[in-house]
Length: 274
Image (cartoon, rainbow, N blue to C red; front, side, top):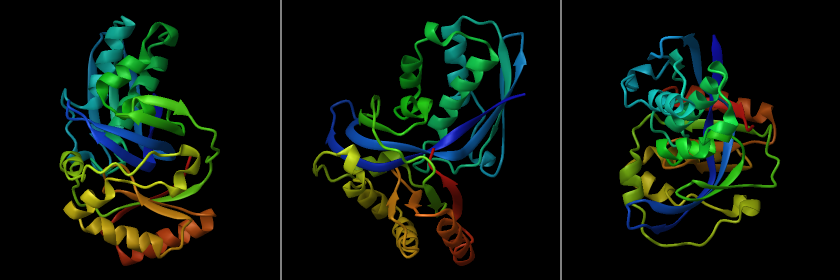
């Protein structure tokens, strides 16, 4: 059994700069990744068949059909690698669906990393950036799952001279649906300026206001997180997951315990940045 973690993505800052004529938005973001996320397992098949089973706390919210990003990523890699091998895939869905932390994109990226090893493919012979970009805007960043500055729709990636590895972080989601499309459509169209990735704490998430307008519970989550006195609390992506960075794991864990007692219906994950 071969395994791979689909690391949860965070947008430490997310600036929306413009609406594009193709319906997408010009963005600037500092991507960071958590040490934990969904888990993917695979067993080799020699008949070329691909199967997917989903388990875990959020399995019921996700289809295992052909539109699942895990299967789409597997089929794209199978074609690009020219392999006749297949796999029985199992996704342990630990992250909430459509929650602003790149769950589906991270799953797709983890599938590519896992099957590359399982099938013994040569990475230099495969155009991984092109495959990743074809699967979704966040998949290229999730492929490396390292701190990166992203521009465009997130596909133009640059390394950043920041060492955030090991930073204690607490993720909290009120488990209220926050669909991405309406959040982007709710952006007011005002360009509030560029993001300096080296000064990201002074940045912002321009999607927070439209997300809160759709899901007021996000505002409550942010207020509760800020009451824990972290170094920073902000919403990730298009919501509804919010995160707080702490100076120590002890402070993070104490905050997580308090929030779990006060809000047992919320989802939370105490982890560290990679």
